[in-house]
Length: 337
Image 1 (cartoon, rainbow, N blue to C red):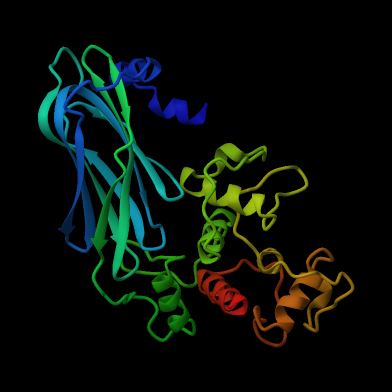
Image 2 (image 1 turned 30 degrees about the vertical axis):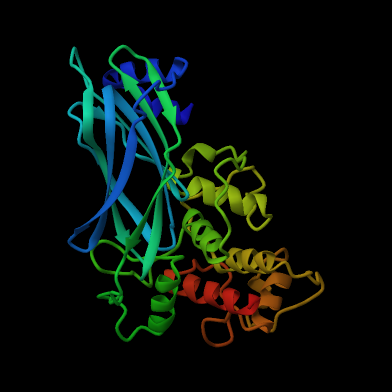
């Protein structure tokens, strides 16, 4: 129901009606699609073009991309009319647009849409146009599988955040960004001391483990509707893998900052270690570590994956920072090699 509400606009009634009708097959001159790359300041613009169109009144396109190298920013339509907000799930984007009123559809060649990405990696990466649905002004529609691939060049730009010079985690942050499981902000900062939410850490963790985001993963939490659309596939994947669980009241609390005890448990689960429930940590504040988390904290600390915050204190209830999260995830990656 949540996704359907995002489509409910008067300007998209024509498109919605057409989506409900059976698709037809093009008898001749099947539309041909193309992807091209344009450089836009520091961003990467991917343009979707279609040729051999016949009376195209509305369209829907789906793209897939490497979320470790590209961060989606926005999409726009070249067709005058109305477009929906892009729906992003993991490494896939769905975008749709329609004309409005009594107007003829597009014929021949036309630019459909443009997608803007921020490069968060170096070298080359692939963008794939997987699906396209075209709607005529008569409401006849066709569903196509173009499978058009573009190899986008991201260059070899070095990451230089304005706020990490002299920070204890500077090297780890730069390495994590190059690996593609975390990125900075559009203002050129990384905010290393900012807290990490449970939804954000789920996304970082799934990317760091190189798990394929499962768009169909079931999320049965009572507050599933409050999980941001960009994070839902990552949360579902982590839950399915047994790495992340909810709270006793069956909530996930995606916007709640993740604390250090929770993060230790998730990392040990991700490593699939057999947990010795009798294991105790040697931190000075051991009495403050929840009983359910202590064996996980002890194992992670013993392996050097997680560290204290000074004075041999673990600070289990303290919220983890972005710098701590990337450092811990890098240690997790290294321990699996």
